[in-house]
Image (tube, rainbow, N blue to C red):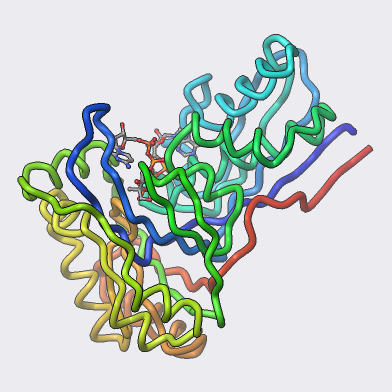
Length: 301
Ligand SMILES: C[C@@](CO)(OP(=O)(O)O)[C@H](O)COP(=O)(O)OP(=O)(O)OC[C@H]1O[C@@H](n2ccc(N)nc2=O)[C@H](O)[C@@H]1O
Ligand SMILES: Nc1ncnc2c1ncn2[C@@H]1O[C@H](COP(=O)(O)OP(=O)(O)O)[C@@H](O)[C@H]1O
């Protein structure tokens, strides 16, 4: 094989329940992930050494050295299979907002892993791929599987969830990013005694039945007050989407992307127009959910 491209989705957290900080610095979560139809494409090709390129919105903020999560994924797979330093060129075509709380870096890690596995013929089992994903980051296993899942532990232990319909979202991309560790630190400051996180049965039921109004009534994000505290202008974006007809408005994960649940596709486009003209965000993008996990979309021989 001379080239493999893998497409990987972004995520929104429809419930993000956060417990107290653990001794290892991570937080126990009840993290209900939903994959959404905004994608990064990760292409890998044989090369003389490990090289990285990235194009698309926000690509100037993506590191192109060995700290890039996609590079770390390739290094981890090569190491496990005794291949030495990976000789591969990785190209990332960004469609997922960078540093936006939509797991773009995690998506690239999962994409690079699946792509390198195909390019090198390492034939890693699903279990091994999930193990490597969990080593790379708390959100990476979900980027691999997609669909919908409940993540416990630090978010890496997944239980797949049934989704009984399609939900339409609008994502308002903010000017600037938020650091995930900084948002968790602000959460700790604002929440001295966080209770143990528990998944909401009503929310899981809303996903299972595909009931958009029930989902809108049950979405929650415990990191939202912390994200708003660090990025107060997000409140104006949330208000603009609500005025535009969103059934629910919330910060996506650690932010600063904001997510708006729409009654249907037409309503999603109206909300996106309202957000775009409000002047409270950089761009607004419409996406359906659930979306499939990391999947090969192109191979050349
Ligand atoms: C908040 C969430 C919600 O899905 O994602 P984003 O919205 O940033 O994409 C995740 O918990 C982010 O997951 P991810 O971005 O993979 O985090 P990691 O690389 O594992 O950890 C980065 C840092 O976030 C904090 N962290 C992460 C996960 C967790 N359960 N508790 C934490 O306290 C720690 O400070 C850790 O050092
Ligand atoms: N492949 C990658 N794509 C994007 N960001 C990356 C990547 N690898 C490492 N990073 C770093 O991870 C940080 C978080 O980016 P990202 O994963 O897009 O956001 P979030 O964690 O908020 O979902 C970025 O600021 C960037 O420095």
